[in-house]
Length: 365
Ligand SMILES: NC(=O)c1ccc[n+]([C@@H]2O[C@H](COP(=O)([O-])OP(=O)(O)OC[C@H]3O[C@@H](n4cnc5c(N)ncnc54)[C@H](O)[C@@H]3O)[C@@H](O)[C@H]2O)c1
Image (cartoon, rainbow, N blue to C red):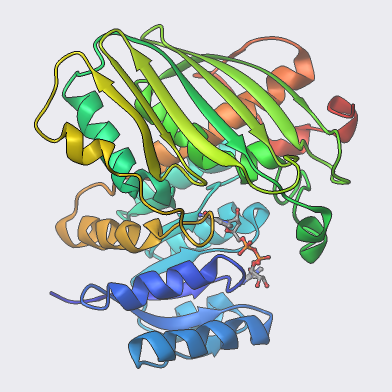
């Protein structure tokens, strides 16, 4: 089978996970270009790829030039979030498959356009919500699919992390409405995606209160969200960048009539509670999934995400986190922003909103 030839667009902090994922999946994918206007960033990742895979790939300051000059099948986009839609649409229109970092965009309109244009151009759009591949989360998915929870009542996503001012000062785009959003959009989106995925995947109404308490950024450093799903279950989000003095936990809890699961750890990587009315043979093994925390909160899910995405392209099937899936967490957060701004519950299906419609005066405490 021919390998999927990737251009990596954006070689900053998260790109190392893409580099490792491409090296680990060398049977299915190949890095053919590293694109970044900051040459030292691209060079660092090119060196890392050489070290991990024994292969070299050229560096481009302008990704459009790379697309013109090289034989590229797919683009992995890991730039500042505010550039995602523009770059993705350019690549899609050139007929390239696109695997994009979260959040896929910062407005419902952009995300919907990306989904529609990927479909029209016959390319696969995938979104990096790599925690869906964590072993305990995969087990949770199986238990949900098997109906082991019975009627779902509620679920909770708690993201109790610390992002200090030096983190925000490292890159001026962080915490801005135009390029990032606040802690809900940047840090909490993974667990919000897992919450909606676990609660039936069809949000109905969203209510939220968010605020900026401590960090000197434009957007929120704390947010509380209530989500009513179409099946009646309620999701609760507690997300913060302000925990003193360091990251505490990222925990997903699911409560049903006949089952309770709590997946915690630093980044939803540990089974903490696993109780079902009807036992299953694998339960003891699953309950023992109390592995060590990953070395950083990004985890190692990108490796499995790339394998899944490459397989989806090769077999012309949907990746686990397609554009249609990736939009959901982002849209819940935009609904939360709108709810904070208006003081009203927001209907998910009809929402049209952009982070650019928020201003700091909407959230300042
Ligand atoms: N999946 C995850 O767990 C995870 C973790 C961290 C960040 N992210 C996401 O990844 C994205 C990048 O975050 P980061 O922390 O790596 O940011 P960063 O600031 O460290 O890196 C962004 C890079 O993109 C480059 N860039 C900007 N415009 C470009 C262009 N036109 N062409 C090519 N490169 C361009 C910048 O020069 C920079 O090197 C964000 O959307 C963020 O939300 C995801």
